[in-house]
Figure 1 (cartoon, rainbow, N blue to C red):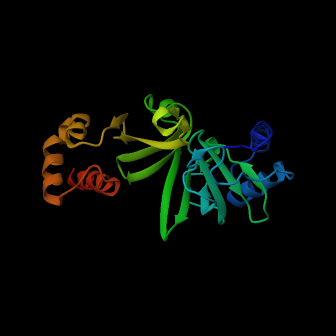
Figure 2: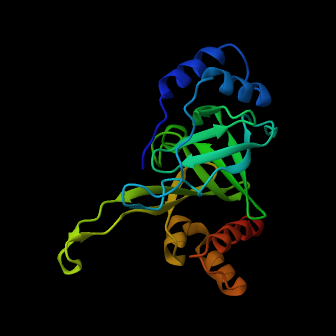
Figure 3: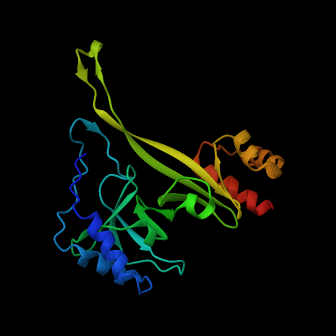
Length: 239
């Protein structure tokens, strides 16, 4: 996948200097994003190139969405968003066509509007803030948020294929694959959750019996993300 972004260092420097004194403001932030690189070369296409199947992005093509910069609940106006899951990089395109990276450390959350649904992601540095989890700021899909929190960390990597003799030495395309990990915050610490009933019981031993009862009563499939989020919501209601 060709990447023709030429200005990450400039953008990071711009944000650090521009925001050193000011609190973050939603629309003002976006306006500054466009002003930092008025000659952006634009964004690479989402088509498959160089014998590569798939892309490193969360979704194919630009997605409409909104960004939240603080905990005050205010979101920006609608912009176009692309999130590169291979390198944890958020790219924003403004209504005037300006394109730039948006450093995740300045972001609280983003909503993506996709196929009639709103997908909510939050930016966290779990290792820094809670002492466990992936290092650096990442975007996490929120499966449950309350007194406790359940997050999905989706990431992609490029699997390199080799020549295969029984295919006449024809090389299969390289393939972008997605891996997911799940992180549970109980108000004190973060632990990784595997998607099995026994693993969840082990991670939350004080609720082991409740987990078993709810899964059976509600016919919950913990392999399904929606069901998994519902399980944690019901656990919180039961506490």
